[in-house]
Image 1 (tube, rainbow, N blue to C red):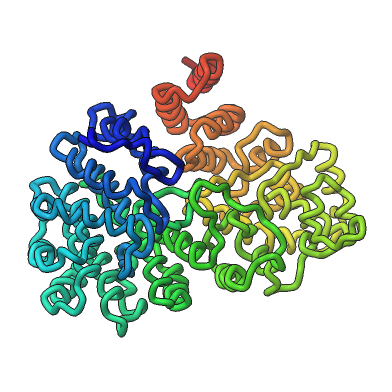
Image 2 (image 1 turned 180 degrees about the vertical axis):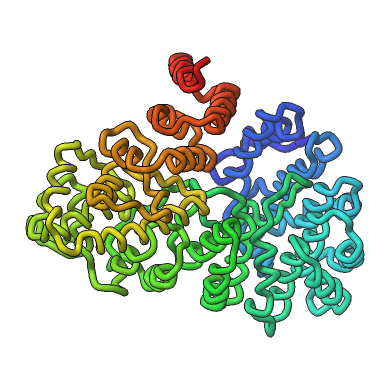
Length: 571
């Protein structure tokens, strides 16, 4: 395999292709770690973002020739598709009509294996069929032989991912074929991934179709979670693509949809439909809609780059600002990030839709005019000078609640008391508490649903809730999400003000729902004397066992937590 080729004389994206044969050998081998490493290396060298190399043709020949020996042939096929161009938008949406010499060589090498590729499209393994579809979709030259197979499978394929794959491949090759259109229309009537793929395919081939008409299909498409079934290779490596650390995956369905909207030059239409879907969407769909809207608005970083920091709204380009304004009236990305502050009122003030609050007001610092929140991030407490006592109190609450993440401050108990003393006589204090507590409790609950880690800082809770408690009034039940499970004196004072059943319920829900188990277990154990219950002890035991199995604790941490749990249970 490849013995007659001097690979050192061929070039890829990072220089000589000398190591390609070794990497392909590892790719088809049985060692999963070596296979994954070689796949990553090959993707970063032989796959170009709309570019091809003099090694492209030989690589395709070598990869297709290795299929019979491959432990995971679908992985090899997906890489072939990427080399042919499926890694970037043109592959599915607008194939090259005049390929470069190197691209033509790669496609010629694939066409030389047409018989093998067509056989793989009917392979007994669904993941292989799906990956073969992706390769065939990049080869319109084989359309006459490919179409009958795809039409048959689009209508009768039993495996969801493979059927969806056949439908998408049909859309790439349809070119007015009525049989293909009928097969795609039949898929639209299905639910789930198949119906979603058929909606995308319809939008791809029928320019009279609208995103609004396919609202249900788009929801089904974005709601697919990759449920552990056969691999679905479409849009996994689509480039350039938005990158959403640390938001949960999958990203591929959103990538495909955004690429389609841009190809059709109808990004605004998709943004309008996606925004209208938010209110009725469940948490998973809201998360995917967030990714779609952020990508459409050019607010997300691209592959591998860290999320951009929050700046002033004036630094946004017109597309980014328009999307920021669109998102300002939603609870999407509630904890902020990707250039945006936290939802909802903060975001409206930041982008200029509402009058600035204490944090958004601009002050002069060294000859520069900056919003107070930006000055606070430098550690300059003088940013709060000139505010009334109530405005200063509000600023500290909103800042410590990560309205402009991240929060990088530490306020000592005596400083908290000083701030509380400043506002103690304000007539409208409790009214403002209610307004802020309502807003922040909604934000933190929305962050829970969006699976954004959002811990309430003791300083936030102390400044916001202690005025109510010290006035002898009960906390609203809707505000309990703002009660921290922490050992700091002010946090304990808030917990102690709750009746025992409410404390126990708050601790149980916090421990059950917090995705950061290590932190949650530590925090609950730190206030175990206030929240003890048999139900909580059982949950703590389960969580601690889970942490131990996962090796997430150092030996001394595990020993300390087990000791504290024993104190709680009396064992």
